[in-house]
Image (cartoon, rainbow, N blue to C red; front, side):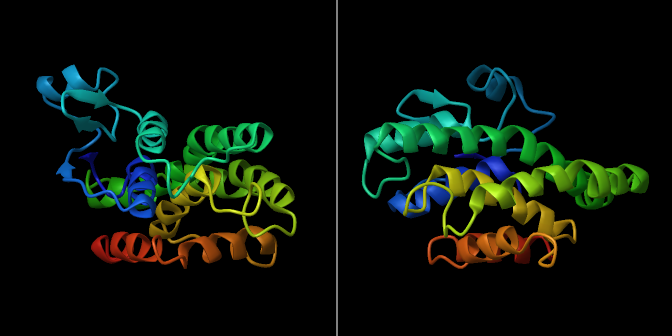
Length: 210
């Protein structure tokens, strides 16, 4: 598995691997300044990249779908058609909109000062915290309702994809406001406490000094 643990997409795959108990070798790879040999395997320059017996899969969603077909149990994708479709939608929403808004704050507050030695754009951070993020959290709060998980009665790819970016958000010093989004805040905490998830969250936060 090529990538870095602080990437929400790499974390997403790591959670799936942990659930299924699949052993793997981690190859530290940054999402920038990549060597030509890596770009031959991941033409979009994306992490994570999964390489196995000559097979190269350079996308988290493709990797997890492959692992599900290769080792179906424990399942992370619902079997019933409508539930599977809903889970895939939440995965898409998380991988696009949720990652975009939370990672912007993470990049400015964490990556810029620690890796690029640059001051964060505080105005941009404030814009995202006040304008961009609330509608996303409002949507997730409504979708959750009183359920423990997003789809059906079992933890799924929907929950993996939605919760992974919240580790990055925590590293930026932020969490969902429990007063404004009580269901979302409790949901994230609940998933992070799962036995297969907790070591990943704690390890990422500790490694980054969070």
